[in-house]
Image (cartoon, rainbow over all chains, first blue to last red; front, top):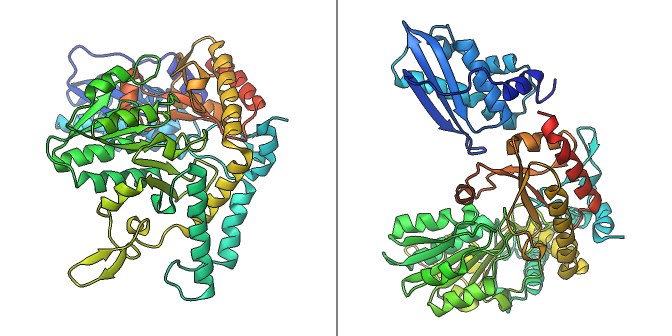
Length: 123
Length: 405
């Protein structure tokens, strides 16, 4: 398996969930201390489900792809599903062989989303 | 044969294959590799002469003490320091700078000013921020001009009778800028301030004469100059060290101790509490000898040629932005750059897949990154063992990176 899998390349080149929402119900942002990258995730909720999600950030291909597949995995799902996800589940979707030094890049978008949902008091 | 080609065989690690490619090591500004003579000196010390230093009344203790103190004499000569009392061994540049900040910080009053620069490594910035927090002193920063030089007119304006400390890097670890530290020290002294220089990126690459520079404190690390990790040096002017209280207490730094007070040891041991990094000092001694034999003027000329060749080769690649001075004579052995559309960490990871080790990120200089309005850069840095072929392999790889993602 390559460090930059086909999934990572494709999501980096053509992200499907990149952008901002006009009236998000939840919004979160954090910095990767490794590189100073900042990632922001926004979502709209309806009846406990995450119905729309967008991410922005000036970040590496791994973080970008991680945020993109995370939102793909979450849209249409109960918001509580975010708590069951782990970096390992993102990694599986990325189909990549990520080294320990870059695992923070994989994990950051999920942590941002989980934190944002907690702040909103979403289960 | 170039200096790099002559030195290469002395460094065992450079024969490694990384990800299927012969290693090209371009991260010496973070930590240099070690010649066999350094590795062997440390091994020989542990196999034949190790014991604790200074108070062991037996043969091994005496040998260890002699070796440790001989390393001090070698470092003194290498730096052009006046006396051995001016050479304090620490664990690295960071500890040296913290030592100065702690010891000098105690003498400062609320409202006193400390002048740093925007291009400082965090290790010559954060300790002074801590002094400001504890003592109520005020931090002022010399701005960096767009070409990567310090704004010396602004520096002159920042100096005032309130300035008590000027803390700046001799050579920037990102931009490579060689700051005019002798001139800056003279200006600071005229204002009545002490001068603390971070020489971590200077001593491994340039001829450095601390007496000629005239700073009060000059700090650097062993591991960036072909020596082992875990040892650093603080050069302090004797008359300044003599009037400072020690930063830390413990064994070795005292002459006599009572239950409620103690009398300090002589210089330099007053500033060396605890068992020092003896083997690492022995390794540093071997590193200083290795560099001394090459001659620092030759080392500097060799690395300057590599720096110039790298800037020239990278500047020709579409999408490359170079940071810092473009005149290699004003620059240490480091080239920071970015490639449009490629995050530095992705760039470094892709280069690593071709066996090329470079640094990526903010290089512990986040305020400088904020000035440059970037999150980070790629950084290639050089040492004695790098060759024109290393530069060529880097340039060839960078030219194709954008097609990889």
